[in-house]
Length: 480
Image (cartoon, rainbow, N blue to C red; front, side, top):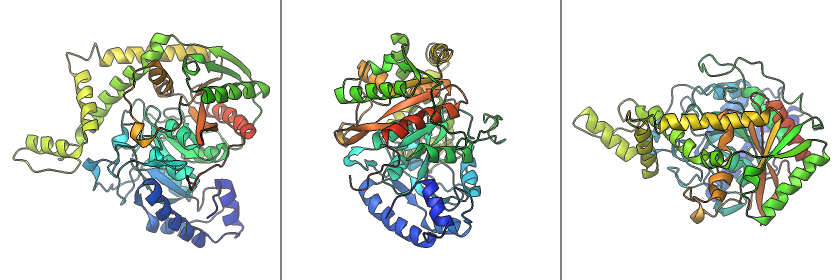
């Protein structure tokens, strides 16, 4: 089976160079093979894809294009588990806003992808269906929490998939899997129907194998939705038509507070090459720093805010209002038994921390303090944006870890700063995009570009210019 970009597949369908039904027949054969290899799907929606295909007219770019959803997007009549036992039989009665938007565009839903339980994790090892594996090397993780979506795009199955990003849940797996991952401005896309993690940080985003495809997908989903009062009323640009590789007027800040923590010499060399490339493209590129105390505070600040908001958001998963119900003599017993059985130990620990931070006697010195530190971090970022259009960093300091080595418990600066700095984009709500920049030991590595609020076009243009030079668009791995 040949893998195509959105634009190429559109042309082939429109000009009758490929029979769509035959294409989908071959696609689902490949889905079976890749599922055995990668364990990326929770649900394969074969019947739904063929049903969607019947309505495709192939006139618009997304009509007839296959895609995959992370399993925390509500889909009417289709199992939506968020990879949690608590929701293992949950079938929504409505669609998330972006699901309806993509249906209007003519997209065909191929399946729902695995994720870390309730989106809380960075390895995709906590999923109810087991860990998702990396298409480039199935002994390694795909990353999380949107690892299933990243894996299906990186394996070449579909041109795009949706993820959600609360701390780095799109961008980190995109880097590990060698594809493009984009978290736009908070509020640019409606979160209606997205099972939440932390509402002040959660952002709808996507995975593609090139920047042009990302422009197409973003434009189809962005815009105001009155059912999500946090969604922006700003007009959505035509990202594809405005895309350019002329970045000679851009000012790029290299955040050395992050890049100085790189210990792998090959990853450091690659990042230095990216910096030189941007200079050759005519951009003004200069080093900037942020106070190390604030950089070290990113992870604890994120941990307190995210888990506190998650504790509040998921209080409804009690076996009575929502979630798999366990027996009990009283409502309290039902809730205790249901939550004890329905959540993994990993999630329970996060809820305990969230409850601790929200307790009235602790709010001021934990939750409120974390909010104050978040503001200080955002203020430092905004100082950089006064002089620069883009902040450039490495995406990670390593390739995708081996399955048995992947954990979130390291406490040295290389981990605390280098592996958690992508949270900056969530703290500030700014657009942040990861794109592949090379390979180390046969595994993909990546860089991240972050821009000002609602300046998605600037971020896309900056990434597009680099993509054209590096020649890493449309890459995928089926065999590992």
